[in-house]
Image (cartoon, rainbow, N blue to C red; front, top):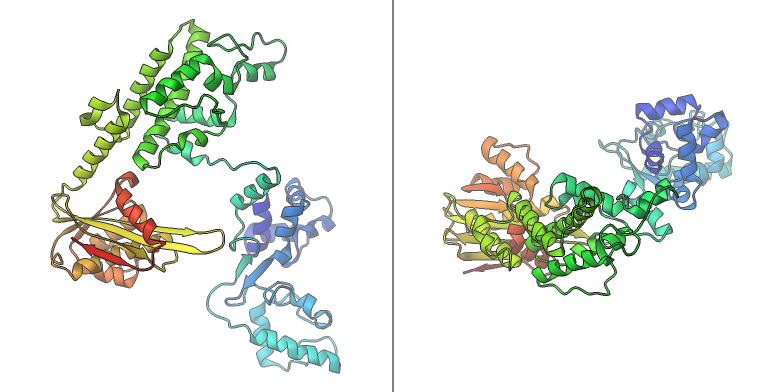
Length: 510
């Protein structure tokens, strides 16, 4: 709802906005509260007004918290919109506004009239101006002369954020008022697991899995026993079933030992999944561990259902074996585990994953080019508004020997631009070396960059969003490009993040 309130101000030339304003007899500059004066507002309008009745949203989404950035002056109203400093001119020059004949005129048209006619004449004012009012006309003239019209459209900027109100901002406000944490749901849908397991994890995170405690809460006193299906001890709550139950504890203990992790017996099982899955910093191990956690929760749930509906009974070791099989199949399907590395899987899963990563990196070096270039960029804006941008890359020969690495800070204004800069710097470095005539395979984890370069190389697309210097370098280079998994680009990623905080660009040739 708050997003629609924002769009009421920013999209007033759209058809839906004009229709609503016409229905409730609102002018182009009126706030949404004006709809109440027409009487009998619709349910949608009432909902929008209810958003503005809250203290946080009411003040942040009020008309005065938006400011126009002037382009051609065709959208911004000269008197009623905030475009000069922090107030509308109808408030700054109240007397002149009352006398004006053009209360609802756009800024661009008003400036055209202002340039063609006498500033104190009858074209602008309802009556002859007094001396004190003429002094205000001089101040108004200074305001209008400060505007430099151009070919761009006028843009409405929101003052409480980064220029545009977002739903994410509204969620953060609501959660901050209720002292809650934001749950990032993306990690669930990115876990390497079947869709039905991802849906199960989503239900687990939402605490809507039909445990006996939840079923009794929904059904009432007619529901039978709420004791745990596995141990017949405590009541079957979400936390008990998946963590404090002695059977579940046995399974988790086997899992932690398998991965050489220490299981803290006093550890309170988190309601948010990310608190337990964020155990590894290495990207490949981190992704695999998430699948292990997902498989463990899923297997405990299946064990519980097996006993409830079929009377079956599995031991902790039986479930542990099934977990290893499930994770192995999921990771192999996701190309995160190679057959050649399965020999260590049952005893040393991290060793299997490390070996798989080595094999995948080795496969990347098999192509018809003499060199392989790994590149990456890092772009991050802090809450203070400070931007840290850096680039990094590594060049290897056909044997996998590193012949050059580079990193350092850059001044680009976006993530895509930083990726382009990384490639540009690498190609320029190669141009000045003995490898200038060599064919090069460029590997990047940025899909947008790969797509743009493929279009340019194949179709010589002159309308590419890449800068002119990069296009020139590409036109004179012998390269191919390929998209790779982020876990295989960790070295370039590390150099880029380190480069964002360094003092200057560094190129190291072997």
